[in-house]
Image (cartoon, rainbow, N blue to C red; front, side, top):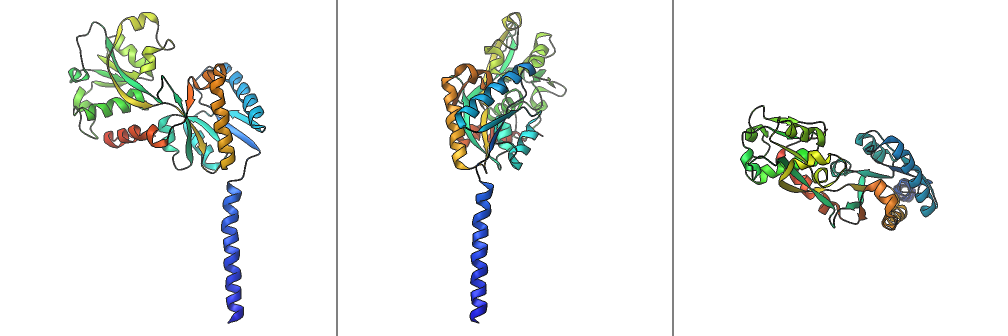
Length: 294
């Protein structure tokens, strides 16, 4: 009896040690930090940015840093899952998909907010005063995978009771009247050439100078704004050790004093926020519209 009891206690102690030991191994500090950026810029420019960021982080962290540019969000999610990516620059939608394997570390802050707006844009010569007047009219969404140019505008239609939850937008705009571009510019071009009465795009397409020519912008007007659309996020893998997470956050925030490098990489100030604050409207939109992104 005694021997059996002693053996059982010994086994239980061993199991406890193993249970404690393996999580510690999975949360061990890395010898190298891998950062993933989005492939949304000129390839030559991104080579220079990668090198500058690697140098900056290596010096600040006192640890080797590697910056990569995966070709898709799926590759980034896989990297966060299997531990080959430690920190990633992702959209709000990509953050939702990576929710089980990543934490929100920081977000970009634009004009004091960690969000921006979606715009419905039409020609200045048109008489429309609100999106409600476009019932039965041809319109263009930016793309089937756009948050600001598809998901958020459809969610707004539901909130305004112009569209029922989970309904096809054609039930409001009319059969055959809903088209999709291959991006913001292609959707606006449909408005400019008369194929659509309005297009849904991000506010920075109109407010900035990178997407449209001055001549194109001079012909357009914002019909309506909706949102918020969450700004981009710096996501860190969940099973990275806490010390390294804190160091990464400190180094990223230090970029706010190095605006030249920061703006080349992330376009805006980096700021703290919570996952709930950043993603709640996006989660509501997905639930109310029934839209699913691959």
